[in-house]
Amino acid sequence: MSFERRSDAGYMIDLTGTLLRRTLWLALAAVIVLAAIEFAADSYPQFRNLIGLPRLIASLAFQYQITFTLLEQSGLAERGERARIWALLGLSIVMEIAILIGLVLLVIPGIYLLVRWTVAVPVLVAKRTGVFEALKRSGEEMEGRYWPVLGVCLVFGSALLLGVGTMFALGPHATPSSSIATDILLSAGLVGYWYAAVAIYIAGRPYGNVGEVFA
Image (cartoon, rainbow, N blue to C red; front, side, top):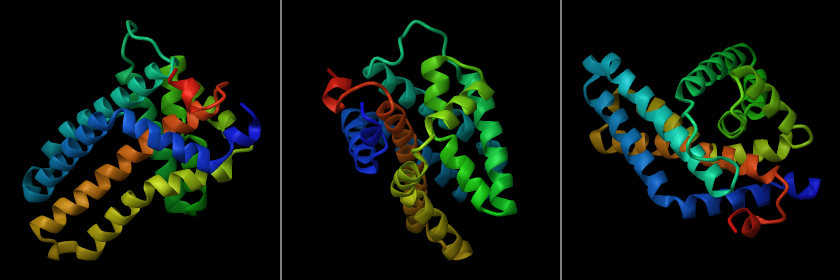
């Protein structure tokens, strides 16, 4: 695949849409379950800390399953090998801490790391690397592709940003229906980002087009 093609935001967005359509059932299941857990936390704030563990488990399980399924369909991962949930947990912790620090300090460093590490999870799952090797390889994958990838992340993260904005705007005045809508937006944004990450990773592989990926 040419450098221009693998760096084309439109191509990566189209590929994300293809991945979503092919595994729509999985995407919907993830959104519904994650939104339901968030709504339970909103409805019963006294149990929010207890709900944190099921939320973490569900998020990791769906992210791994979505990533692995898409990579397997594209011939970039194989079944029969041990699932790497613990490695994914470690990677998630390192990424979230570093990105959060970057966002708190100057915002721009956090956004930079978010984009630079976009494909860290697909690398971890496909190449079965360690946590820091996945981060390193993800950074290498972004060489010359930063701005197009940032655009893709913004497109599929818009629902996440809208959900966060709505949550803060409503605050204590949120109704059950508005809470459900916000939780769905947040979950859809998160799941959309997972799909986009895999699409960006696949776009960098030596395939001529989407049809060849799923041939």
